[in-house]
Length: 145
Image 1 (cartoon, helix red, strand yellow):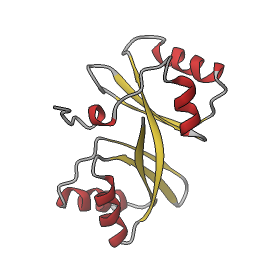
Image 2 (cartoon, rainbow, N blue to C red; image 1 turned 90 degrees about the horizontal axis):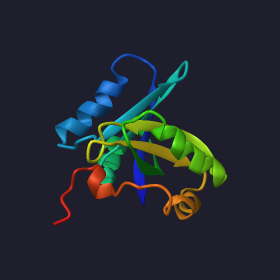
Image 3 (cartoon, helix red, strand yellow; image 1 turned 180 degrees about the vertical axis):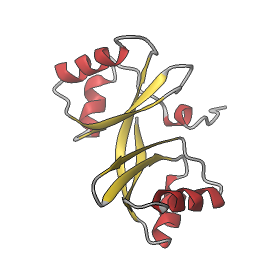
Image 4 (cartoon, rainbow, N blue to C red; image 1 turned 60 degrees about the vertical axis):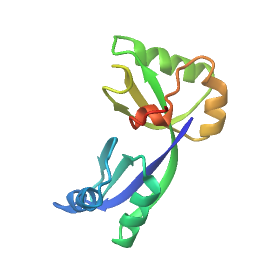
């Protein structure tokens, strides 16, 4: 299953990331996981949020450059070699990884690795029988009852 990820372009200076996160907190929006990467002048803050549409609207109204991308979460054991086995499946299926980051502990005391593929739909179709994809409701801790 695909997840919607919020990507923010943030200026690489003190307080910029804090401002974005404070806006979300003030509006009661919980962040499930995040990743921050930097360059000389700007960084990329990637967020997984259940109520991503509301978060996007709040951030855009406060002049943040926001991009929504599809990512895929794959469940892995907390054990040596688990991620290597996932990468072997991706390689065998010729699936290109644009980037990835971890969400641990994830579901049922396992990790969730968040992947950005160049073609998420094709990747899902190729790997869903071999790898445990994380249901978005599980990732965000939403009861399915």
